[in-house]
Length: 309
Image (tube, rainbow, N blue to C red):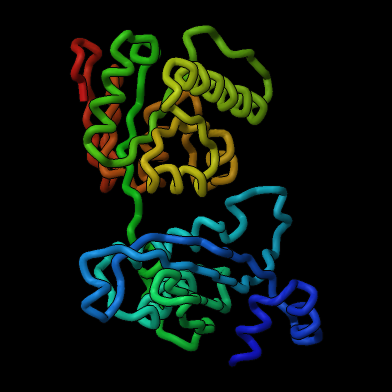
């Protein structure tokens, strides 16, 4: 066990040599991540925060498909920081050992994760760093089937019509939505100017998706808080970190393949599908009416006053 931990944090060359011939796994790592948190069993540690350092290495199964430089096909670094953030937010803990176990369990719930090395150190309790190191493997500890779904972001998805994108009240609406304290993802449709036409349905679908993305950039240009994002991993990260996103649909729609029949020109079907995929808390649609989608709270509003949300 101790040699495993030593190898986990050693130079990659040493790790490679230590695992040669035994089907070595890929690894991702988080090093020297420091958080200020209240933790500890001693009275002197209560009512105050202290710096806690995290070093985590995760062994992952290599993906069977080409990566194609696609963040949605890997176990993201954000998975590690999110596990730390979640476990620190659940309750105040006395022991680093408890925190390490919970973080390891959280990470191992991810399908690609096979083994995790966790080192946690208190940096302000003495002349040096005081900490614990553990290694846990999938199958070594019980993992809830729903563990990977802990703390889903449940964003508010908002469709803006072209008139709403150009409204002088746009910044007011963003202020109002931000004040509510939950994540927001904007969706838009095709711009008023017609997109190019193609005789091939597959080509036309891509053209229309790109036209929607051009309109997303128009919205982003209206307020710097709106960040255009196309992949699920980054959308989840933005939702958990209070960033307003504007959905660029090409990647998710094309990656879904036969799992969605939503077409770019059928904007109601497209945003309804997207809201379901993101497990949205609700869907607000400005100037359009969206039919019912199973498990989705939908509200349609008209662009007729300053406070439409």
